[in-house]
Image (cartoon, rainbow over all chains, first blue to last red):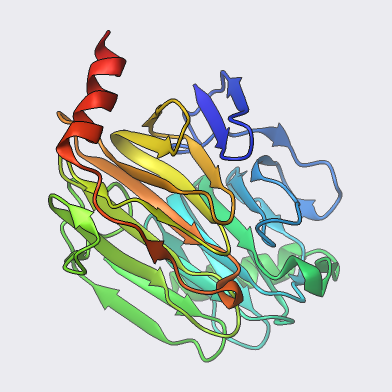
Length: 155
Length: 155
């Protein structure tokens, strides 16, 4: 059971969801916005509003799935809750990620994140400073770019 | 192993920590600020800075432990990662909390949160809109207030 409690009016939202791969928070719906390679799911935990000035969502990546290259005008925080993944900032070595890791992504830093080739991967994402504007999507992480990260990791 | 990755300069912080009761993120240090009843622990995951305009921390409550009454000028989001607890807003019925629940606490709403009497309780806390000022602490949740919640729950 998944429940959101708002202090505004005591509204509740209850949902049954398969949590088997999404560690604590629901898996949500398949991402269909064209900004990912491979299959990923997203569940909005806190959506856009004028109160908190940030959003919170749970993202689940199947093995090999990753976001496109992108940047956030207001920055983003990732809290890794399960599986194995990567964080890649342009021009820097890839950072392997696992349960318990925290990633602080500064505003306007070009990057991508996603699962390793052999593991699903789950993180909570907190895009901050909503008033600074929407994420900019900058094209897919090609198989060559992704495989290059993998081969560096393996060597 | 707990790791924070910053996109600013690729800094890393590694720590060994007992995660047995804190579900994914570290338990951290005992809270000694005088704003809690009972024993609780806090680990800062993202501290105050001028970039994200919010903080993120992991809070672990022992059974019966709870915050004092307080309010946040900028609001707060709680993401419950384990155990059993309560969220109580002044003048409203208590909300029981468990793994996977999300609580959106509007600015300046007087409230407290904490563990049930017989369970530890863990949540991620995200105080938002840091620029609106510090939390205001409004005195302990008395045993009478806490026991009143418990007895209502049991009946």
